[in-house]
Length: 406
Ligand SMILES: *[C@@H]1O[C@H](CO)[C@@H](O)[C@H](O)[C@H]1NC(C)=O
Figure 1: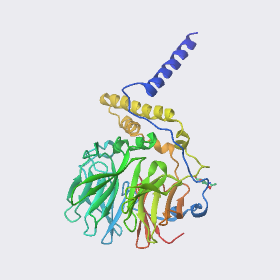
Figure 2: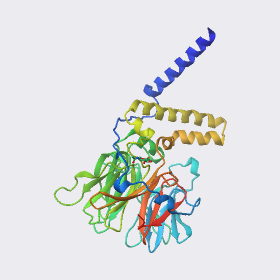
Figure 3: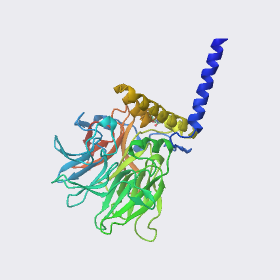
Figure 4: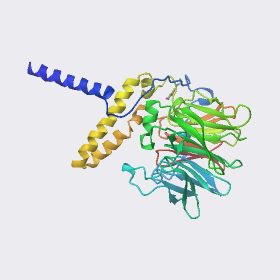
């Protein structure tokens, strides 16, 4: 009798906790939306499985943390890493050029620590950086000085810039285009943008001459990579959560109009960069098709389940952070960090590496895979001197392969 009573009380307590987590006040403001996942039904034609990525060379293993974006100046490659550094890569040497934020401890990263996500050079060698914590920056390579062109919190049409992710520059016009991935979640909550299916992202333009900032497009679902078309008449935007690339007309009578450039991708696109054949390289976070759906795809249609998971994770983090005040255990600290930043998302996404080349009409020309996921979570492809360099927002290495292997 007593056992039944205790069991009943436990179940009741759990049900009440779950109800509180789903509907209770004072918890994380997480408003997930239902969505449908459209993926190619199988890997065929240009998507035929191969292991080209696995054959590639691995550079700087363990020496470079999350080289998300890559840019070239005078024969050297530059990248931005997880500890806020801008790093120069010349042949087999790595040199830290500068840091975008103040020094920071990786696991307890605060917003004062920089996170350079998108890098572009102008012809003069000024390095423009979309930094998730520090805003839009200009780095002088020679002096290492970092000039803040637009800090976070700069208001544009009533909303503060919150999560700069990637940029491109139209030098002739003197305009920087950049994505503000979310106006709701800052960078240390970026996985909530994905899990919520938040439409709070936008594309902004910044005129370097007049200093005018404009909203080019808004209501976007995790806008990520930015790339001007080869003739600069259009702007391509990777809409990560919708696994597609949008095209925004910049010139002519339909200027400002947004259409779909390419969709039904076999995964979420990160950055877009030009390919030497006149098309574009796209790196995917997690490759898959509709016969290999991931956990996150099954959860797409169940926003309430996603709400409970996300709010529970955040609630658990709050409890752990409270305990940490009295008992500063490194294991708990790590767990609290993971729960608060929702790194659980990596358990919901498959590990399958993929990069693709698109032609100028958005059709997939070819793709390189890592079926076992040993090379996954890819963020950008740089085609340079007949090689492809592939970055990642999380891996601690860079990938290099011949551009023409297919
Ligand atoms: C679907 O994707 C998986 C990898 O996620 C792959 O192993 C499989 O071959 C693909 N299936 C088809 C039918 O192409």
